[in-house]
Image (cartoon, rainbow, N blue to C red; front, top):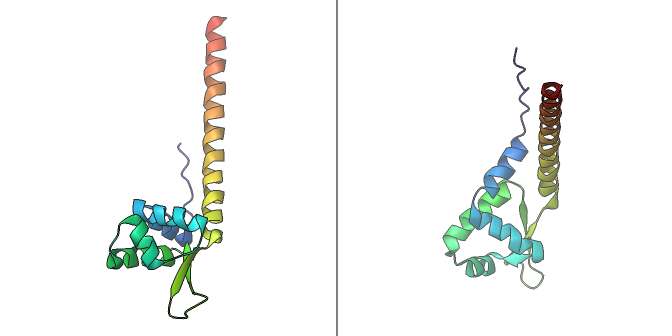
Length: 121
């Protein structure tokens, strides 16, 4: 009988993965790893029009990967920065997946080696 995996609902992780599914949004994350930036600066650096960048930033905010803060000089200017908590959650989940596959591959290797040894006898 085949064991079935218990589905664990993780809406935060789902939102993070959706937000990172787009290459432009991943590039935004890369830029924000260096320093916080204004939306206009991100749009310019990535060759995006303002409305398109606004949509990307909205998805990243809804995935809680970034947050907007008021600029120091002008309260009307929003500066975007990373929220590392979500990236840490993603890292932890990927670590769990890696452990699972390492265990599976280790068991497969042991079985193949045992079968090979048994055939040589």
